[in-house]
Image 1 (cartoon, rainbow, N blue to C red):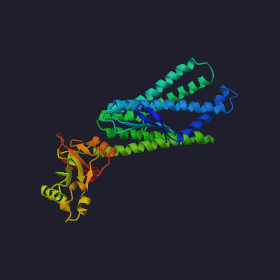
Image 2 (tube, rainbow, N blue to C red):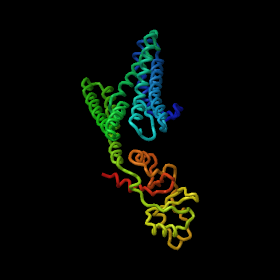
Image 3 (cartoon, rainbow, N blue to C red):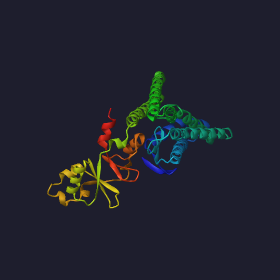
Image 4 (cartoon, one colour):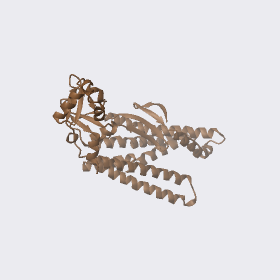
Length: 359
């Protein structure tokens, strides 16, 4: 993976597979280039590579439009990656409303169709030659990318548009994801069958490419279906219902005293805090039990506490999809729940959360 710069505030990465595609495009285009401009020799392939670069710049514009809209909705966009089958935008978290899902998804195909339409308009006024050939290719490729991405099947943009529509109608994001994912699987099967049908004449390249596309669609749809199942399981989870009672103690309190107070209070967890009450750690039960009894009165409770890193303190009212996003983005064994005043409400253990969502 190579970093080539930044666009729309995100790193742009290029997969090594891009070079394979650039070479393939150069070979495929060489007969057409030779037809338009005979006698170029090795420069024929240079023109093909130049077209591949222009094509992937169009793909980059498609992905950048996703990034721009996602940022407008407040999401963090980590990177844009160009690879074998096009591009992908890495966005942290999931859409919180159908409207966000719709606009983040649909802007990509709209951008590609707009670029394709502009290239098509330029094609009509460009004289015959290599430039016209490149513009012709860009027009066709962008229009194809835009239209195909509107197919209502995950993991394509059109699948996310379908997901947003079903989500808006049912009020359940996991239902929208499941419908779009099953449509994606169906589309993958159709593409695979078409690949087998197209191989009847003995051709290899086109059926192979179609089978790769079918595998891409099936894999992406299956992953989305798995996510839909997890989202459905989390939909009824309320963090406060699973919270363990926590005892908040000063960080310098002796471990023996902290353990005694926790037993008396019936607390399942101990949270260490600063003098002003800000939670800074959660006592590791295994580490606490490992301290010899004769040393516990002389050891500060903070020495057996895990530091609360950013993302490990959550609002007590967090539920469903928001809770799932947090667990996925900041995995940990325990999270501290805070009430509206910033005081410790309790501790949410990942083990308790897993038991709650397990079928």
